[in-house]
Image (cartoon, rainbow, N blue to C red; front, side, top):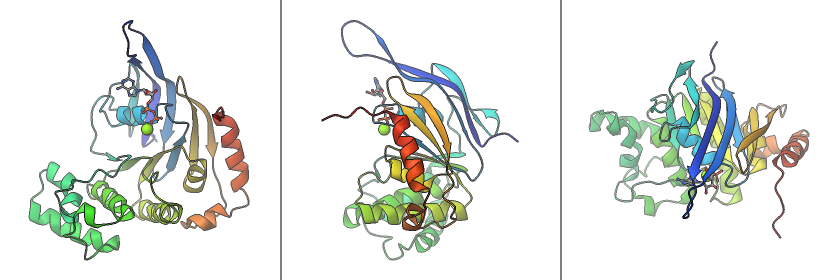
Amino acid sequence: MAHALEAIGISKSYEAEGRISVRVAVLNGLAFHADANEFVSFVGPSGCGKSTLFNIITGLLAPDEGSILIDGRETTGTTSRKVGYVLQKDLLFPWRTVLDNVILGLEILGRPRAEAREQARDMLKLYRMEGYENKYPSQISGGMRQRVALMRTMITDPQIILMDESYKALDYPLKIALEGELLSVVRREKKTVIFITHDIEEAVTMSDRVYVMKARPGEIVNEIKVDLETDSPLIPERRMSRRFNDYYDMIWRNIGIEPVI
Ligand code: ADP
Ligand code: MG
């Protein structure tokens, strides 16, 4: 069976700033896949091309070489409804209420507003945000805003969810709570997740498989299958797995970050 998503030989370079035109290779021959219901992470240092890669997967950016296949079909350079994107920052519209932020994706798909709102209300209950329908983003916490951003993506029912450092700016207890929630949601809704992070601990606790990247040019240096020997979606429990440190160590050695002191 075809992979839910497959990337073949993705390369991308940018024109460097300056008087002499030089092209800088950002991604170099990336090949990877994600299967149905799989949680796959990309971990790598800042600047290794993770966000560029996501823009290529969503079709916002064309690669110089290579192709993206979804369910075995070439989709390079086009946006697919099967793919939902949760951005690095929660980026809610401040002038829209929580409810109207959640329905945004449905509006773009042309669904009638009343019907979309009904669906969003049910979803808010499911995500334990009942009563916040008419609040504005500035009136809710950072964790709730992130939850709204996830709902906004989930409501259009994509098969594959891309998440770009979604929990980066949150403090630790909130981060692990939201990570656990995300694992429960994507398992229940049977989604494939491709998750970008520079946080090795986050990659190990969340993923079925991890691709490790290095920078300049961005390349995959290793692929690690993670088995923490627990099905629990609770992050502290996953973190306590006696295998955790081995995976952490393996990834740390692969990334090869040079200390900046
Ligand atoms: P990451 O998300 O891993 O931090 P990015 O994909 O954002 O990395 O960026 C990878 C590299 O490409 C960086 O060196 C960045 O400066 C460069 N870059 C990103 N976008 C552009 C652009 N539009 N034009 C030129 N260079 C860019
Ligand atoms: Mg980035």
